[in-house]
Amino acid sequence: MHSLTKKAENLLLIIWVQAFVATTGSLFYSEVMGYIPCELCWYQRILMYPLVIIYGLALWKKDVKMTLSGLILSGIGMFVSTYHYLLQKVPAFHEMGGSCSGAVPCNAIYVNYFGFITIPFMAGVAFIVIFVLHLLLLKEIRRN
Image 1 (cartoon, one colour):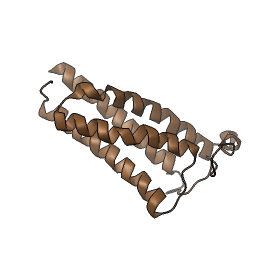
Image 2 (spheres, rainbow, N blue to C red):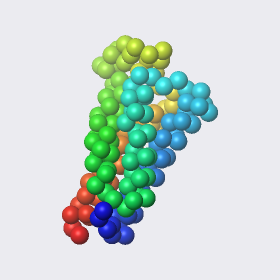
Image 3 (cartoon, one colour):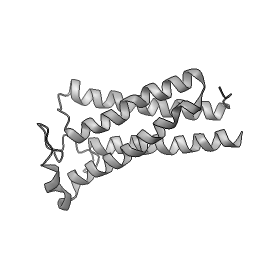
């Protein structure tokens, strides 16, 4: 186990909070608002939900070595969310989004705040924040 600096511990906490907020947000939209997740939404959930556990345990044990899988999951999540957002917003991709095998097409838009913030957009921002903060965390660990 590696001793963490205060900055590294704070970065780990912010990453965990971001993953927790994203997870509770997705549960809010499905369980409270009643929005049925499409196939790509499920993939994003599969990539996001474990991050709460991974970073929570790392924070509790103060061990960053166990978080490499979080970096990988968030990296993949960025691409899935970006693709999903393109299916919703770019007309050239829009037709592909209707071919999802689930009950809800992947180009369906439940929320559209300010004309561009959709659920995949919010998930993508969360994945990017987690990924970038994890890189900063690795830089902080290498410095010490």
